[in-house]
Image 1 (cartoon, chains in turn orange, blue):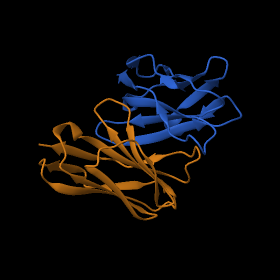
Image 2 (spheres, rainbow over the protein chains, first blue to last red):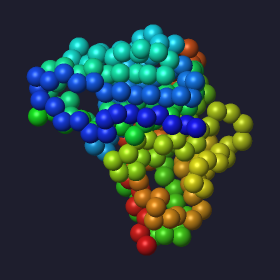
Image 3 (cartoon, rainbow over the protein chains, first blue to last red):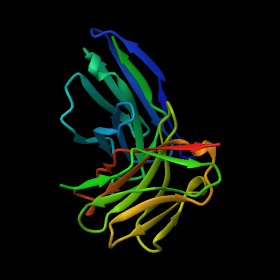
Image 4 (cartoon, rainbow over the protein chains, first blue to last red):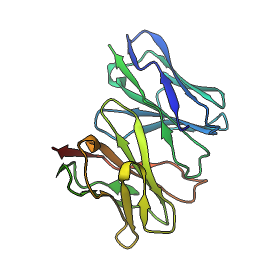
Length: 113
Length: 116
């Protein structure tokens, strides 16, 4: 089963709100990723976790805060976002980092008002 | 700088005809090559990848891709297009050695439209 699940599917939030995006996989993958995708553009890497440790932070603003509570779960905490942060947020996982295929979830469509 | 090019923003094909979506890359060494598809309002789905070996890679939904090392290309193909193949297709490349640089380099995407 190559399934990555994400909740919620849609999220609308104001600039002063705090919300969280959740991602889960039960494939035993040890690498998990957060991407941001604008319409009709390729995904942009935000964070990478390897064996539950933050491996890459692509200079993402501190209003985005990732968390990896265990090997199956990945969260993205959102606070004081800007309208330009509105996008599709994709979670992905892969068995390891080393060139393995990344499997993507369906994404969370985020709108910041 | 390392890059992936998908030279066509959009490809239009009649249903039943063969389709090709082009991808070329400028990445040192022998990278891993991937194709992903994205249907409207959905996440990306893995189609196929090339690591080594046979230059023709077969993937999901009847798609295949041809690797050409001399032309640094990895074109996606399907012998007979279906209307349901209409989607956004991304080529991605993962440089080697993996331990030091494992991020995917993405092409800009090609919108494939299959007309009945």
